[in-house]
Image 1 (cartoon, one colour):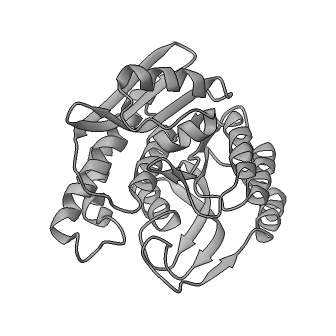
Image 2 (cartoon, one colour):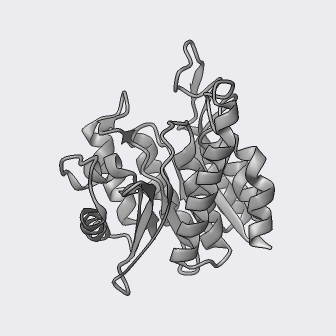
Length: 276
């Protein structure tokens, strides 16, 4: 049985970060360990008065205990990291648990729609850039790619421009950058670059003009699970794009009721069937 660990925050209510990653990767038949970087009563998108408890100081203690137990992982996957201190601690975790026979996925969650998330600084961007250099796969959106490369955000980047961005992302040190939020006519999807072979691969679905929380977490979680199960880069991107699109479609009839996230639970059975 394959085993993955995911490191990101958990919201007690709301569908993002660990509340997406744990059920999705587990449903794919992978033992999923977690390191919560913070606990929130709800996620921060649209809720007010939420509680927040920082768990930065707990991460090294968890890692030290796991080292004593001799635990190992086939995949290490990080999502939202809230501070430069957390980025450095996760970098140390990579050094301790990374092996030649496992892989690291970094979803460099920093912003969207051309803007850095509130509270994030240039120091965090620099730290995330160094963290991406240690990863095998990185999964930025267009905003995060522009931050990592220190280039202007281009909402209308076409496929040719996206390929150039992927080449430059690979120069950070990762072998397989994956760029989400790529537009192609009336379609929306992701492009990936294998810097070893020089090949590009992508997957696109009909663009759905609806913003939902947590879709990036759904994509990154499915992608990580697929690679953990031995899928190649193209297969992993295809599965992640299709499942994310299916989740958005399934949410549309309920969008006013679940504005805090997508109804991914309704689609987990189909995801399991796809892997049989």
